[in-house]
Length: 362
Image (cartoon, rainbow, N blue to C red; front, top):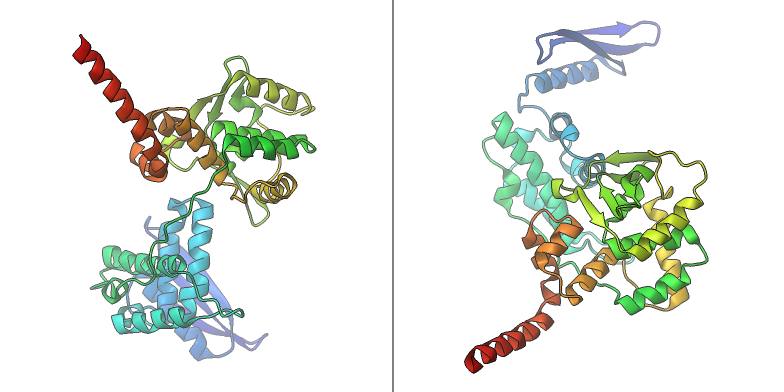
């Protein structure tokens, strides 16, 4: 490395030469330092990062963590993680040397988070506190597992918050039909909600569907990708889990509705999205439909739960429901919808009683 003064601007710059992981010689530079000391401090920090030395600051290690992790998760997932880290963790730890952060420092940070109140006097929820702490724990875990940090101070300090029991609500078939009738004034919204309710897809899966994904002759929909809108960009990613890739068979009436919908998509290409809007549009539309129909308020994702509850009521097995919804494990289906099954236990017991009576008669 070398530090130079730019006589034209009066500022300082650093030229940094290094060998990357491929053994290639590289060079980079940083300009605009007001003083030589600032330039030398940046030079020192860059050397620590390149050598993965834990004498670096927490902020510098976060850049290492970002380089290691960002390409391994979906863009939307990284955006969520990064936002929490940049707004709730870096402001407190950014300039501390990561190897010098102790459990007592983490506890002091936790106390500040728990003491926070917004302009309405509302604290962070227990679930959100737990999420923030999990991100800090993950960064220190990375330092422990791959960069020889002796221990994880966030783990030693103990967690805060708790995992909230996520409330799940849903519409009965009667409620959905009332809602759907109110949506008929906007055909594209009506058909999108029809697909969500009668297929149980996630909204991102629906919005990623192309004309290629639908076989109207076989009455099938191929779910193989997901759509998101991030910072004004349309992003297509693989679906949530490997099991999310699936073929959904649809009823004849929905096939006819799709024929009507696609007949109005003039000039659509086979690889173009069929529902050319965003999740925020659908969230706005569900609110509009709820107000117009008078049905109870639920979230957009709860329409997927409404489909599942319909399948439970119709007597389908957890395995069949798991396959249609694209759950990775049948346990996910059982845990998510276990509260819907108690009503079925009585029916099951009654049928066993009848079966036993038949055997006694024989």
